[in-house]
Length: 404
Image (tube, rainbow, N blue to C red; front, side, top):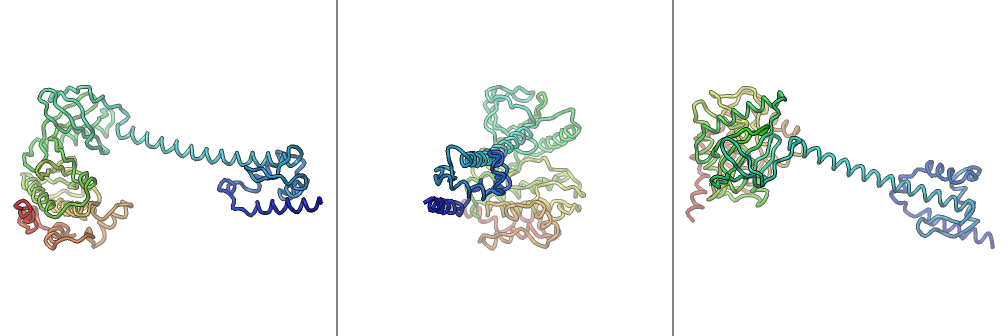
């Protein structure tokens, strides 16, 4: 009878041992288990192994713990073994919970640090508080956009009720790099002051208030082209043709100044959408006045950057034309040129060293394909100027759409 009871208990135990172990049990090594059991019962050391302990204790009782599937007994070695194993599993479970908690805390800490970096470790004034500068006294509205160098806010002039966009940059005057950046802002403002064109965002003024620098610009209620694409998806060719004509007018205006002005960062995020299908070039933080070319100056955003810029060779107006061709691809695909950039370095190598041009992986008209090709030939000498592209047949699609 005793042997029958032992055999039955052993069969039950073997069935339990063949069950698929949980993830937590996998994390527990046999060595740790032996150590834990040894702590629970010094008598177990004479058995030689964990299997020996369990096998011997089955004779005392065939009862199973419903929660842990272990042989238990209110007293004796079985009870100690069960408590030890139970404690071992609890420790493993707590350790796993601890790791998850630690990971969540690290992620939260990373988010907080990123937020502090973006906002320069300073709090923004409450929106209800008026900000008084020499040019305007205004109230902050919604956040329109945020970049690595500052934020753009919708704002209302308290005196006139005029709605405008305010570019806010925080300057630490004790930091040498911020002093250099402040000088680049002055260059951007000097450019804005000289630009008056229907397809370039209008400059309204600027202010310094304590450690903050504000640039007041015309408000465009549609947001940027990249925001529109994110909300609504790819654009129809007729709308792209309408936008293309305006952007070429704006670029041609810049490229015919004396001395000429290179934008150097033409992309969907720097093109703003207004009423009645209007678009305007904005953000001249990377722009430069030049007699003809900029030598060895790497400026712009990688997916829209021309090969000659990527290779830090001398470049000129046709680098902006390449970027505009990339914008056309962005508009028709609702994705950055060259596709989603999972590896920026690989994209840089591809742009700089291959013989490829940005692919267009959607069906388009021959006229649209031709204007993209005219903008994105790898040899700058083979690209057309903005003034030449203004006569391209693709732009007629905008006139056809407006007349219907």
